[in-house]
Amino acid sequence: MKSELMNPSHFLSENVKMIKPSGIRRFFDLASQMENVISLGVGEPDFVTPWNYREASILSLEEGFTAYSPNAGLLELRQEISAYMEQRFSVHYSSENEIIVTVGASEALDIALRATLNPGEEIIVVEPCFVSYVPIVELAGGKAVTVRALPEYDFKIQPEQIEEVITEKTKGIIICSPNNPTGTVLNKQELEGIASVALKHNLLVFSDEIYAELSYDEPYTSIASLPKMRDRTIVMNGFSKAFAMTGWRLGFVCGPNEILQAMLKIHQYAIMCAPTMSQFAAIEALKNGHTEMKKMIRSYHSRRNYMVEELNEIGLPCHVPGGAFYVFPNITSTGLSSEEFAEKLLIEQQVAVVPGSVFGASGEGYIRCSYATSIDQLQEAITRIKNFLK
Image 1 (spheres, helix red, strand yellow):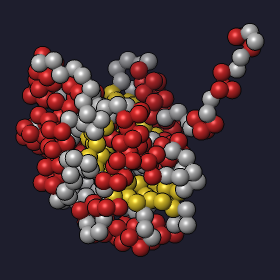
Image 2 (cartoon, helix red, strand yellow):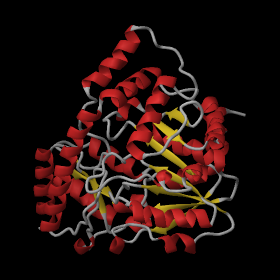
Image 3 (cartoon, helix red, strand yellow):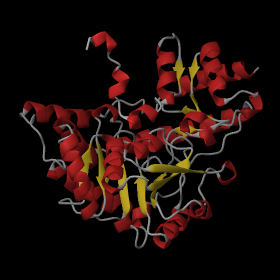
């Protein structure tokens, strides 16, 4: 057969064909072609990784640590993660067999779902949600069942909403606190409500805690720390957000031994191990990074207060998000869809935001604005948005 007669799509997986490209990526691509753009779209810190983390990585290279690490990650890093989880979130995980160092928190969720889902089993996903949750569930062979977190409850899912969608095929639920894109944080009492449903219906909880350190108004609670929850919870976390290490691609996952060992099988065949030099930087971050982290958190906290106040002032109602570095204002008063609003704002005022609809249908009527950029840029962005609304 001549090559020009071949149809490459014939070889593609049906699973992959049905997955849509990320809606965030389309706006990044559009913004990258324009000049003088203020980006409130990117979900990554504007801080450079602190020098002492970088120095630790450089030193590891100078000393010749350029080979694979153990599949689960350097033991010293796993020991630091174990101590961090116990001291910070009051949950103990064995560094020997209950922690895997991954390539970002996204890989952690991917291997957690692939290790636990059978074809057709259902995972409850709370919307609005990070763009990858539904596709990752579907690529793992599962079915994502979405439940809308309502704005009248500050986007906090209610236990009875979860119970309404549980079927005999339900395997678990993905929660994200602080949430991307709404910034909503679930407090201890609210997590207890979700935990009671998980215990009653024998559900796994996949807890994305990548923004856990970026919680501003009250102490953070991990659902794994609640009674009887540790052994039915898989915690995903990482260094990208609070430690300003997005480009290092380093996350970790903690959970009960039997599930973690199943996940390790997938990790070792697909990834082998996380980058060794990144792991040395992470060891330094956990040992000596908390002062720098607190400086960044104070800055984010101040910017959040500014953005919420200004957005409400210019007529885009915005709830006060308890964490992460996103605000999620309502734009329905403009009469535009969230995608129309984002596209027109970008073209007319060169401000890049993300339409709420890319985070699920329930995000329609909102936009996500990241305030992980300088206060000068935020002030200019607010001025431009105000001009756009005139």
